[in-house]
Amino acid sequence: MDPLPSLSPSLSPPCPGPSPHHSCPSLSCPSHPWSLPSLSAVCLCLELTNTHFSWAPGARPPPCVPCRMPWLSLSWLGLGPLAASPWLLLLLVGASWLLARVLAWTYTFYDNCCRLRCFPQPPKRNWFWSHLGLVTPTEQGMRVVTQLVANYPKGFVTWLGPVIPLVTLCHPDMVRTVLSASAAIAPKDMVFYSFLKPWLGDGLLLSGGDKWSRHRRMLTPAFHFNILKSYVRIFNDSVNIMHAKWKCLASEGSAHLDMFEHISLMTLDSLQKCVFSFDSDCQEKPSEYISGVLELSALVRKRDEQIFLYMDSLYHLTSEGQRFRRVCRLVHDFTDSIIQERRRTLPDQGLDDLLKAKAKVKTLDFIDVLLLAKDEDGKELSDEDIRAEVDTFMFAGHDTTASGLSWVLYNLARHPEHQERCRQEVRELLRDREPKEIEWDDLAQLPFLTMCIKESLRLHPPAVGISRRCTQDIVLPDGRVIPKGVTCVISIFGTHHNPSVWPDAEVYDPFRFDPENTKERSPLAFIPFSAGPRNCIGQTFAMTEMKVVLALTLLRFRVLPAGEEPRRKPELILRAEGGLWLRVEPLSAGPQ
Image (tube, rainbow, N blue to C red; front, side, top):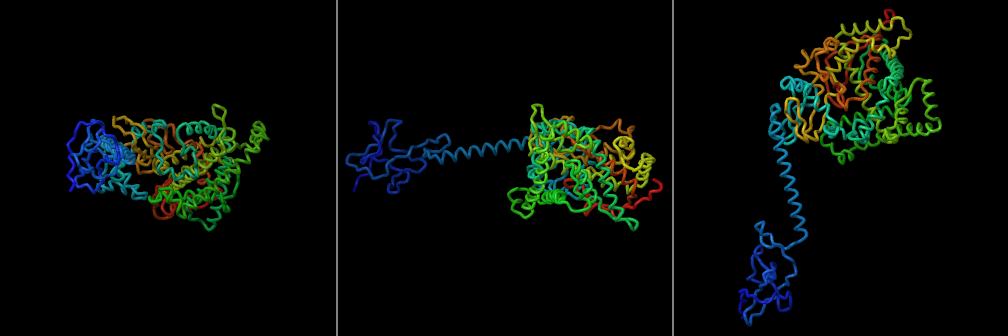
């Protein structure tokens, strides 16, 4: 029987390394009952200390796998030497990075929680869901918002689940700081807007940074008064078509109509003429392009209600996602064909000839302005840029104006005394004029009608709120801070219904906008088109169209309630569940 080897170290020459007669016990050598524990095993070759183990005379070294793997000392972690495998190092680096991220997130979350304690918050449903489901896109949800604003008139914080805070501001003094911040400090929160990206591209609604600033400067001339003047005739023509339909439908005395359905078609008809100089007769017969715009809007609204379809990869697998992409291509193809046709004729015609030709018909459409636009360096917009701005204008322009007009007709139907006063104002203006159409200079001669429109936009703003994601700390006037990374909601609806700003906020009272009554009120108390550097570029266009349509509608029809009260439904714009139904009665031409 071989004697056991002596493991006493001796100061001998350095170990020569592996050889047939010199082996080192391995961690994975099961044949050695004397092998050391895995985490405390040491190589018998300790070159760093210039020592090695020698065997007793006559002892035969046991066979063992040569020690070829380098070793790494992790004693600083409380571990013994371990094999320096690249995978082990990669795992260690990955775990360290993950731990650092978790610690950083935990610290940021804790810091934000401490800083947000100065904002009041309504009672939570429970610790996990927090305030999710508190405000739903229904009539009940709108009433909850009204109550929250009454309880917390400056603003409040809610939590979307246990870790996502949402700061809501609903007072002019509070919203000023966020609305006046640059697009770099408070850009739009893109969670919802990303749904529109395949359709609208990098238009003004979705773009940011330098691209947004450049496009904003280049598009501003398209909404100059001299351009808008020529659109008044188009508004008259489009509303005349709608009224002719109404008269046919009300041939037996009156007609029950869904205002959103009819007015949306009318605003799309106007926009198509203003943008493309193209008449599709969409109010009288189906139009593939107009149907596409309406369908895309409906698909986006439906997707917003299904949170599990927020991920693009899942949505594109559904039949609705595939339909959305097909209709996008149809709408893009229509816009591209018109842009390319105009682009081909522009060099041949020349700028001067184009302007002369447009001066004869007194209309310079939206695409003309974009094709002629140049930035400070003389660069033009690309075809893709023009398409994005055109699609954005068609989307944002038809829905918001249709919402504003539908709700003002509803409010005047509920208040016949205000409706009659508006009607008399229009009759007096057009008393000796034939045909009875609104002109640009008439718009300033309708003060009470304008007050009625503004009060309706206060009670029923087309956009109920806008969101901003703070890229740095934003200090509010009262010293409270919205931390970096937190999403802030500017509640337009809440600001307009704030009882500390608007006494009897739920009452429809056009005299709130009498010039004498607006002197002491903050301009940010009324923000249906937002405010600050990112306000709505088309607000004058929208107000002009609303004045023309409302004036001619009240001149020719009496608008009456159709039955039960509509239930508000905030979507892309403020709608009514099941449509906004009113009764219209044609007026005789005699008194006019």
